[in-house]
Image 1: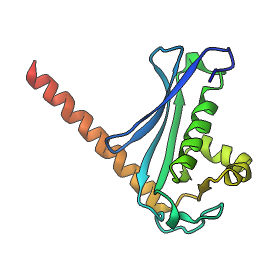
Image 2: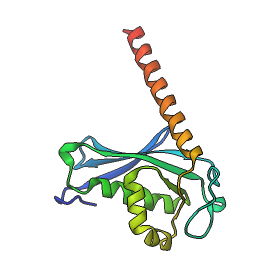
Image 3: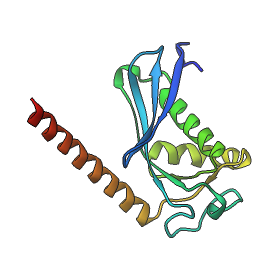
Length: 156
C-alpha cells in the first residue's frame, strides 16, 4: 500500500504486554505512527449494543482502540486513515469486536460503520468497563517502563 505521496507503507501488529498497537512505517523507515489498543474478553464489558449481526458472543474478543497518533512531520499523508482501515480489516479477519474509544476510530465508524458491518465487521459503543480496562493497561505499561529504567540503571 502507498500513502498520499506514493511512498510505500507497511502496517504491522505489535502485541505482548498490556497495550498492543498497529504500527505504520513509511518506505521501510522507523515507525512513524500507531493505533493503540487493549484486548478484552469475548462478549464485551457490559454493553450488548454490538452492531452488525453475529453479536459479540460469537467474536474472537473485543479490541478497545483508544489512541491513534502519527508523527507531525508525516501529517497529511493519510497514514492515520491507513492505520484505522488496516486495524479494522484485521479485526474482521480475526472476528474481533471493535470498541472505538479513540475519536479517530469513532469518527470513521460513524461515517463508514454500515460499510464495515456489511464487510463482516462488528463494533459496539464503549462502556465504563472499557475505559477502566484502558486506564489499568496504561498504568501497567507505565509501571513496567519505570521498572525497566530502574533495572537498566542498576546494570550500568
